[in-house]
Length: 150
Image: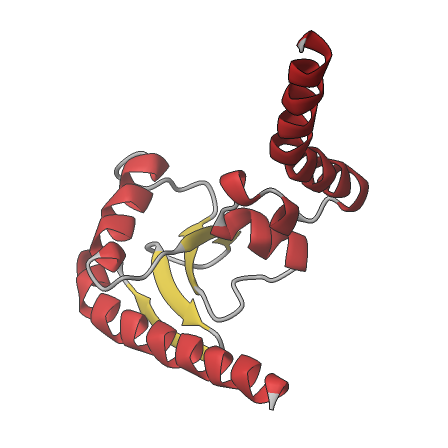
């Protein structure tokens, strides 16, 4: 009876842990985040696939050489992320510096669409247009993926 219980427990553990162990092994071999479904994030998939925003939204912030934003970067990014989240859109940020600028400039990039540049005082006026461009790009990407299966 004890031997039978041990066999049943071993089979149950194999059935429960087997798939998890196999997918973890595949993840460590391939580094493909698709094999880690409980830790799957948009950022990890974007990074793995080598996308630079793909159909997603990129916020390009160009600062004059030596200048800084009037608020910490984290606070600035969170402010814009909150605004975009109202439209169901995420954003990633890219910073650069440029000679000859008098004030920071922000450009929203969604696929091939470039919205801006906007001054820091006028950022809000481009958010709705950028979110709409993002949605158009996301829909286009979805249609292309569906067409690939036809």
